[in-house]
Image 1 (cartoon, one colour):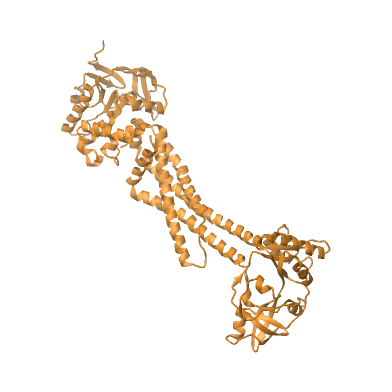
Image 2 (image 1 turned 30 degrees about the vertical axis):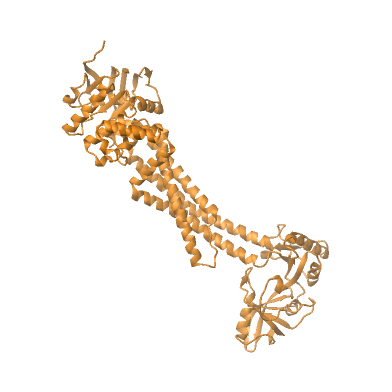
Length: 227
Length: 403
């Protein structure tokens, strides 16, 4: 469970202070499928970054799986990201000199996992996203859809509870985009919570719960199956 | 994160930019090779000079008048050469009676003119005794050396150094000829084979006479030096103390001589040349520090080129110290590889120098290679810290926005 209460995130831009998030209260439960939409600059990405522990709120409280993570240091935040959160980016962020297998392996390498075990795990995950024949290809030898599938493999290799995707189809043609959405939704059906930031109402509309942001505040929260 | 994975990822990153990596390796290897080559030159010079002195024989003791400042002698006394009380032939004879002295010979030096027929040469006259030829391990060319006999008997005989003999007589046999040294006439007993430089003194350009004859020519009763040979290698120090005691007793209880042993001379030169070699190494090591600055520069570029990658590493859970370790290892790999290539180039260069100049025994001391490699790695690490810290300090959100 992700619980935000009274979260603000402010930037200083020149002499002005921008309120990217303005007293946001939000709860995301395990296994949910949530889309976050809103115009540019409404704070969608900032919200996703705060939820993903990449960004620190200026004020407010954030409880992740019951633990208050608002005041943790860099390394503690990194540890939480490692265990609980998988990221998918618009531009894939694969490391160009590493093969598909090595890219998926990377989070396991950071934990010091044994080479044989982590290789088998990474290979199994790539197979599950349909890249069995592409293990030794480098990112520049893969299509956009294949790259994003490698990135999904990397995001789930640590078996996180939350999958945070920022415009996951924004850089893909519609056919690859649909394939990526199917994979992500299948992962959600298997129990992982899926949060998608998107401009595209067709993509956003597929989620069970729709959040709408404007000027740093949540102005719409539809489909929340709160008790 | 396992060390082997850190190393593997660093090497993968280096392979990604082969040209840049090659240039850095070149810079570091030139620095390391420079240390090795320069110290090899210094060491070659040291071996040449100490070899020259060692050729005189390590059992040799040189007695000179006057007291050098530091006990134990050294080169200072030779250079200053102040005269307190003169050494005499009687001092020489007294020293010869010590059981720890195998043989002894006096030495008188002076400038003179030697002539035979119309040919004339300015030479150094060396007055000494029969023992000189064995003490100095001279080899005769033709004829014989000075005859044994009382030191104080002047005889009109002489032995020619090889250059003097060649220039006066060319191919004519010199033995038995009468030549003129200054105003005195003397008969040539023999000639020396070519001796070359020994202790910086060229025997080939001297004429050797009995010490009493030389003293007559230069109108002196003093002896310039006394050369003594200890009866045994182990007794050189005891012999030295003996000589000092004997002469002290003869000089009214005043210790007014200096005894220089070959060891002291050799070790003085040894020290000087070791200092020079170390100085050369230090100068060459500066280039390694410069290479370190290059590493820092390149690593800073790498950090800014790989900003998005650093952001990604942070997103998937890399701790700050893991990112420091990755970039520091990359710098360390660069300097280690460069250092190893440099050792190869340096060793090859020393081998080529030995072929080109066989007279000098070039050899880079092992400490030079070791410390050059150590300095290269240390400079890679020291200059790698700043870029690595900068990488670790990046904000993940901003880093990920850079593609």
